[in-house]
Structures are given as C-alpha cells and as structure tokens.
Image (cartoon, rainbow, N blue to C red; front, side):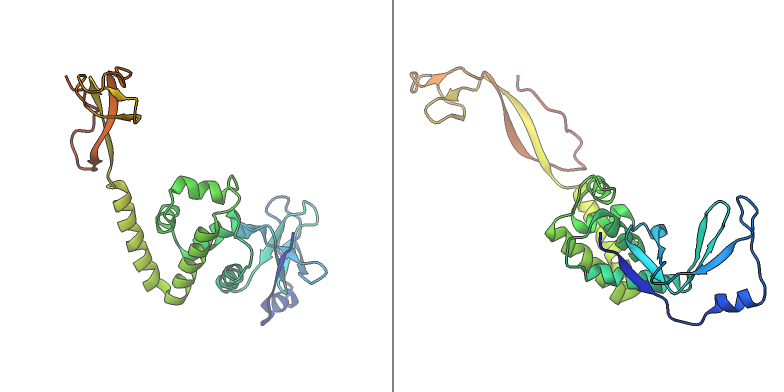
Length: 235
C-alpha cells in the first residue's frame, strides 16, 4: 500500500526543550521517556488520524523504552490536517471509507448532515466509513471532494450554508411522499393482457377468470403529516 509522507519544516522548539534538560516519565510504567526525531529512514506512522498510510517526518516522537508506548509531538496539527485533506482531495483513485471519514470530520460535518448532502442514508455512510462497503461510487466520491473543497475555500460561512442545506434535505426526505397500498376485493384478471382492472364478467368470459378476488393497488402518495396510514380493505 502506498503511503503519504508529510514533512514538518519549522522552528525546532522540541530541540530547545531537550537542551534545557526537561525530562518526562511514562504514565504507564514510570520510566523516563526518550525522544527521537522522525526521519525518512524511521518515519512516524500517524494512525491517530484514522488513516493507515500517513507517515510524518521532521517532528519528534516520545517513546518509552520499557513498554514501547509512542506519543508524537505534532506542531501545527490543524495545518497538518488541512494539508492531508488537500492531498486526499487530489487523489486519483476513489476514496476509501477511512479517507471519507477523515475528510468529513476535518471539515466539521456530522455524519447525518454529511449523508444528507450526499443523498444517502446515515446507515449507508456508516457502512462505507467502517469498510463494510469498499467505496462510495464515482458520483458520490466527486461530491465528497466538492463539499470538502467548498468548505475549505469558504470557511465557516460555507459550512453554515451547507449545514442549512443538509437540514432542508433531511426534512424533505422525512416528508417525502410514498405510495399507499389498498386492498381491493372482487377484482378479476384479464388473462388476455395480463393486467388487473374492474370489468364486467359478461364481457370476454373466455379470457377472464377469477384468479385474484382480492388484489392490491396503489392509491396516491402518503405524506408525513397524514393521519391515516393503515391499509384499508374495501367492504
């Protein structure tokens, strides 16, 4: 799997703290923590981001020699996440679930609002982010990148507009009309055409047989504020 390498270039405040003789002890075993610098030969794998293939170079990592616990010292972490998000948006292959989750969280969108913007259910988005579904699809993938890019370029104002749009889409989904199914009695089947419709038995008796004395039909849409939703049976 190809890894993305991010290099930190800046003032080495960690080096100055080490020169002052500052020491830290491990919270688990109490041993003194050692610091190492992440290099090209020994980079730090940034799994805390939720991504499996991100390597960091140029920063310091605190490591306990006894229990092996590592703790990165990441300066300007918000800027790092923005650079990572920009790198993912420019990825040529489809985004996987971990990458979509990182972009969504970095842009500051709750899962249900982000799903509404994508035109899918929160359950489907959860399955994609957790790896139960490999990819979102070409159309959804492009929409993810467009939403994240719009938020990045527009800042908090763009996020506010997108969240308001998501709320409207959620409301439209909840109040979307659906079919109501009604049970009809004494309906006959036209075996000539294979369709169901009321017809006098005196017409074309050879081709009309009582195959379905009760049958279902669709009677208009059902709205969220409608009081009666139960199926009615015609007496």
